Length: 340
Ligand code: DAH
Image (tube, rainbow, N blue to C red; front, side, top):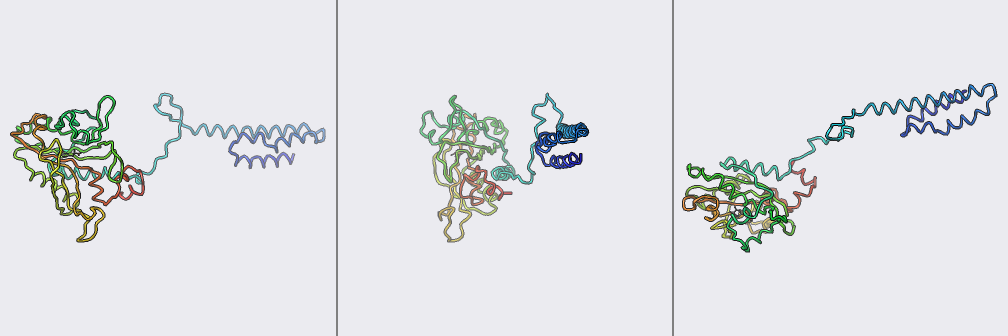
């Protein structure tokens, strides 16, 4: 009997650390007790056997109790729930571990500057058509300049816009009445654009552009330069020199490439960012082509305007001296956390 009591204590202790509680009922110590019944004096055999059965029954009850408790802890089953409420709740990371993506944060700053300069801010589209990508922008059908844009297309002929200029026609058309009321059209459209091109430190297949559009009376290249210069001085927080050089875009006439004095150059020192050129090409711009205005229902004899398209990643890379555009989408926490 003493032996049974000892085994009881031993098994209860063992049970504590057992993962699969029910296996205690198959413990060799318990089986050994049964083996000893036959060694008991005859008049005690029956009591001995009953005591072992009692121990087994007690263990059985304890194991079932533990099982029930585990089930009780679970959520009640709601069969109408749209997701599995019985699954463990997701462990959420503390929100202070997250950061706003640097591109999102910079888009906020950029749009805020233009908003304060009187520009409306709108989005572009991430799927568009050939008319807005090319035709409305004075790219004649079959014109070789269409090939310059490495445009992704779907089999149905839809377009993943390669630039935010796809919004020019829509933006001008929707606001042309403002011009008759003596107001100007001033809009900044920001969004993602896509290009089927080889990737390297300066080229990504997916990046962001900010398209600026301004149309009104007597608008000149001087207004274009002043607008961009004011923006860049505010964004970089210091005076920058700008330079325009002639270029070609079908949707502007004249067209320019807009460069700014390298903000990283120290007097006379070698500069890694601009290879000591002292100028960095930043964006394409120009006076909106009369055909683009006409296509949007605006009389180019009465109104003129300017537009530009600026790659946001390139601008942000310049501001923070980031050497590789691929960092932005790399998911590298060490990179992202620098902008916390
Ligand atoms: N859409 C051009 C590009 O992505 C950039 C550009 C050039 C936009 C001139 C404009 C513009 O609005 O007037 O290469």
